[in-house]
Length: 386
Image (cartoon, rainbow, N blue to C red; front, side):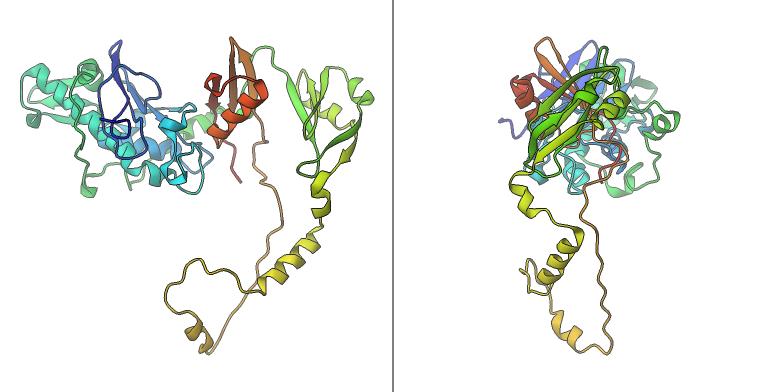
């Protein structure tokens, strides 16, 4: 059985059952010793932790992806604990986005739909098989529901069965629920992240604090590909609390004991920019709009054609047209763009509201000089993606 057809990590460790896919499609469960990158962890105390492999920026994958597993596992969704998955595109890549570990394209649930339901269903069948073995009854006489397996007067929590379940032969084609039996999918389910966001315990990137950390504020070149030619940082260096001022490829970074000190000093920098090749392309909004308007009058490429819209439109008694414009802007998220990084014991640890862990990992490796295998991405809640 090759790696495209089985789940790589399902093991008992201290009474815990860990299950995770090693592939992006055609995946089934298999017992093994590997513990890395599981999709779920079921502890002996019956706690279920689900690892969500997409960034939560308000679109609710935090709850939605979790309930796909909870639905088929027949575990109370309200009791699920959620942890953001680590960087590992081989395990957590999105098959609809070229296998990249990224959140985007409205593809999270489409990619997860079959995959995560199979995780839940396969785990449920393994737990039922464990109960049947323990009680010496047929699996068909056992019922898995609300985090426990019952057979007549006998019952056991999933956690009590976890270690034995990890030794069961997996079903390569678990039976999935019919739509009529859904308890959570398509139903009104409360978001799992609401309590933390209401009481202030939800951690966003800007909330991360590491002992001894410095804050950096960047003065970026206005043009992509540009750089600082000359920097007068004398006034910035005089600000109390400034630790260092460093020129980076596309700007200047001010490091200080806290963010506001860094920003205050950054605003005092006097920088002469070399705009680079992009200087020729810098235009005001009026020029950009004029170019778009001119382009819109030309016939574009036909990507998809279905039916015949031209003839009915030409023969319509009344035609309505409208033009809508949006400015040329960068994303303006509620949370400022940020991340925190630390080099510890030969590893680069990165925390942040990261939508593209795979790209962040590659960048961190390039900057730190460490191999990408030594980069650990810790994704936080994301304060908006647009």
